[in-house]
Length: 504
Ligand code: PFF
Image 1 (cartoon, rainbow, N blue to C red):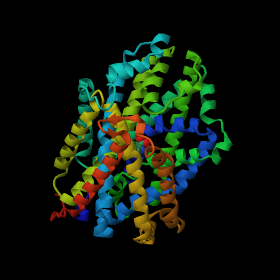
Image 2 (spheres, helix red, strand yellow; image 1 turned 135 degrees about the vertical axis):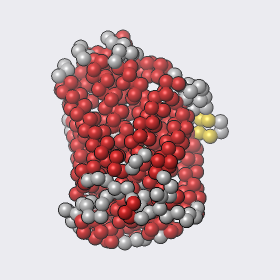
Image 3 (cartoon, protein in one colour; image 1 turned 30 degrees about the vertical axis):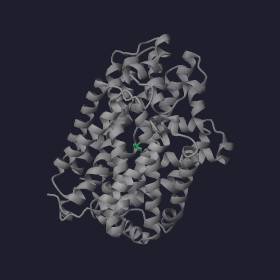
Image 4 (cartoon, protein in one colour; image 1 turned 120 degrees about the vertical axis):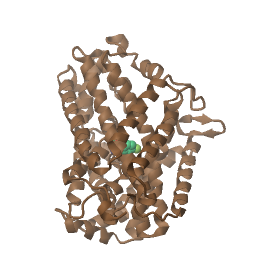
């Protein structure tokens, strides 16, 4: 694509906000606080900051910098290095597409909960608070007995999913110019809500007990593999690297603009958001433990359990403003998710497709949105959660870690990372030293391989993932299958010849 016609961020600020928006997501609110609690509290923060410095920022800088240098999304970057590597750019494109297809469903659930919050539909008082799991699994999901039983589509969820994809289309079809401007709001709104939720949490009785669970340090944890696994995997997940989009987001940066400092600001802002979210979550959990007389092990959860079961229970028990708190909490989830979703869809999928095939942006955007909606419909069925879970493990764990590790090795050893360093240093406020090259060559790949083996293969090879069974395939088989299919598709896309160089 001719450089002048490439989409551009309208200012440095819009890029920084778009990058922060892609990074802050559901994981900051529902994954990070739990990991801190579960891995030595304050000690986890140390491991997590080290992870940000030696793993996250170097990797993020690599993706953004390569995109800016080659003026292309991930596949264009790798084929620009050498045509034979193009597949390595496509693989994370498929990873990004699959992630956004189910991420949008989670956003749809958040939307349904935001609506239900106006009347606190799951009920108030102690009895309701102990039954929020039932509300989520039976009313919202209408869950089936296992992945083999897909059951019917849950229509309200499909309807909410359609709204999410329509919103995504409207945000994305004009490209980076509009995306950047919207990102300022989709970042600022959840920040504001998090502060309100924090104040709400801290004014509840028992808040301090919760914060103790969140932060009281167990330094001995630093000597275990678990804490480093948790810290490194969270850093890889939270910065939204390894899913193609950051190359494209980097390619929209203007020729003369800063790269290094902007990337660091985005990285630190993301971690600061997680840290803040931890206070909002744990102050509220402290209140819930006191109100229901629950031990921490029963009150503290991560993921869907925290967002859709535990937090609603706290809302049921709140003495005042329970409906308002609920609406704000779920809107916060909605906005946190939205800018990660348009990052995955646009930077991860749409921009790479347009680089290769050309064509009108609105048309490609519409096609990807419809496909994302159709694949997402699978997760709106009664058995959808099981499939979402397996796919999440396949792409958001294995997919992003494997493609990330290989990309660093290829860029570090089969290309010349010094060129990239010179390129970004030329226009950046902060100059990056040669240390960065060694991070990309050695530290990042080793950290990712450690995470893959320690928390991945060593568990999913000997045992079926979550004990799932679908016919003669088990959960782990499905995971390997998804990885193989996406890899094969990546080679197929590499082989496709195109004449189109631009997309006007
Ligand atoms: N970084 C975002 C989050 O922490 O939620 C977005 C994201 C990352 C979504 C990784 C999905 C994913 F697999």
